[in-house]
Image 1 (spheres, rainbow, N blue to C red):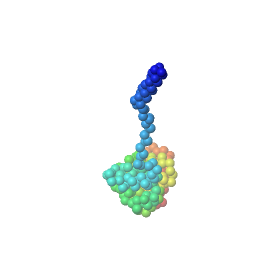
Image 2: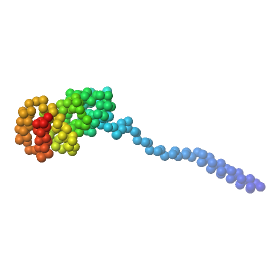
Image 3: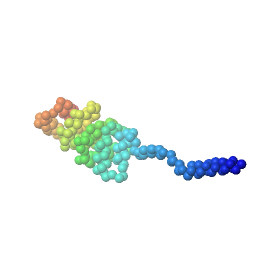
Image 4: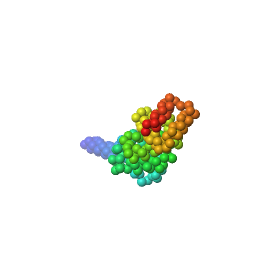
Amino acid sequence: MFKRHAAYYGFALALLILVTACSSTPSKAPASLPSEPATSAVTDHESPAERILSLFEGEDMSAEDKATNMLAHLEGMDWTEYNRLSSGKTLETLELLYTHRSLIQTEHYTSLFLATTNLDGASAEQYAAIVGELFTKDREGVVQALADLGDEASKQSVISSIAYHLGYQDVAQVKQEIHQWQTNKVLRDAEKDVIASLIAALDNP
């Protein structure tokens, strides 16, 4: 009987030690899941009109910074949509760009030239003033950019706008200056086509 009690107590002691050891072993924490990337507050699906309006109404930018940023994002602008979204601020926006036209760089030309959709009335005149004075300042750069512009409709629209603005000057003298400039340049065929279209637009305002 003593042997049976000794065996029983021995088994109970072993069981107690095992339970104590298991309870004192620290449990492993579950592996942390990778954190979700932060969601950007700005969507990639803004239309050009929405983007330009956001820049125009920005309160933490100077007028110069607004103009520079807008010039980089004009491509594809629909001015009817912009006028609706901005409650009629199309002319005010174009006036801002005209006021700061000295900030227009060659890298802005394509963006500016692909922003002619639904220009009309005073806004069309203001746009014509911008591209017309740009042509006067940088004839070569404007001709090159127009020659490389893939959108033929936009190209002709810009050429017509330039011709409209130049039409306020002595057209005969303007044409003479363009012809003289052309004879002193080695131009590609696409660039010659731009000049020919501009002369035609000056002849038929």
